Length: 182
Image (cartoon, rainbow, N blue to C red; front, side, top):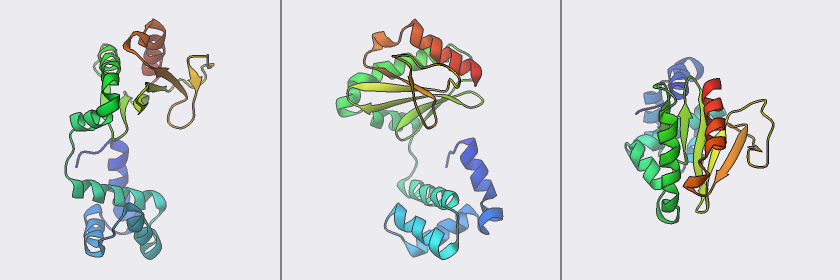
């Protein structure tokens, strides 16, 4: 299983926090065979007293293991399939531009987006609809504008991009600033 650093830290902490290793939790779930992620969570939290965060980790990793390995390219292909296929050039352009920022850029595709990291995540590229790509940026303290809107969650701001031409100097400036701050 290929996991990010934060997930690996949680996996490493499982025995101390829950009394069992990830493999031991997998064996328990294999035996119990919960039908859904929610059922696995309920079992881990209710019957075994596992905290929500660790229960979610174990249940998610167990499902991922059962599904088998998924490549980064497969994750991106799934995000930009069907009606969203025409948005893929926007992602490609963003990745090309970010690649020029430095050798320390990590491109980490996930199920619903592509995380851009340095020492920490500085941007997140998602295609929430067939009409636009959403670029989330970590620009704490930067005043929002009509185009650079305030956001909540993992990113402080977001920019909606509907075409490759919108990956312009202004947008790339914000992206570079987020990279520089990471």
